[in-house]
View: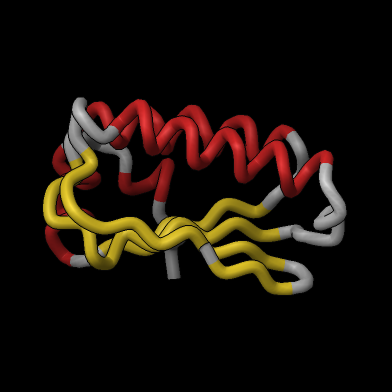
Length: 103
């Protein structure tokens, strides 16, 4: 995790599948809580960097969607960066519009 005055970047790697989903949920939930309730209240953007993720499965996508909802309910901008495999997985699931920025 990289923390900057107005942004937090969480880098993940490996497989985000059913086995990794609980840990992913913990990391994202804890980070959001720290940002919202802690001394980092000036943070306005959370970037989830999945460039090094090999497999983005449905369980990982579900955790990302739920965390995005929580982050946005606290006024945080939510950005997800993926590699081509991740983009393809999100597109096939119909979630690219929900999780990825359009440029």
